[in-house]
Image (cartoon, helix red, strand yellow):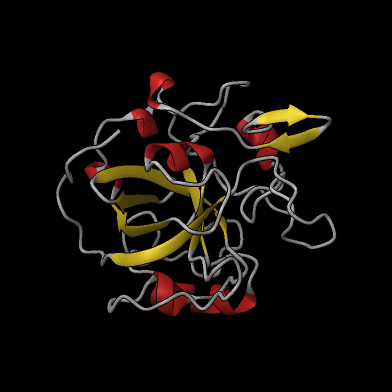
Length: 226
């Protein structure tokens, strides 16, 4: 799926950023606090809220699967309750103390309607459900922020920087975001679950998100606390 840019926002592009793939139900490392995608930083019941494993369960393990345009990059083995075009960025504005303390100062939309006055509200995220425009070559797709990572959770300089800074993360080939299987397919990643594909991305206001498979289900659910 490819589309022309639907109007420009005030948000800068972040270019040539390594993007890895993650999915609801993935268990990366059961021994670490951020190693399970059965929950997200914004939703302790993420897998339940989403509707189950965003892939295929083999021998009890939730695996990813390749997505194609034939069905709008939707999951092949389950019916999602939330947007399957999702991603994460390395700024956890709820559970990381440093990110929480600075969020009202660094998040560009913090003083806008619906966000203003929320700085001290631990039940509210400035990041959850925000839209992002992603570009790989001539392909442009859209997704919503539903988790934080990879590996770093207070990287305000990268996430909100205006001069195209590099991510602070050094793991996974220096990845600056994770994308869902739907976005992996929509952007035509060369790897199903690798760390070599690169994208450009920018925040985008919901009103400037064009029609596409990413709007079949739009996630509006609030934070569900740990």
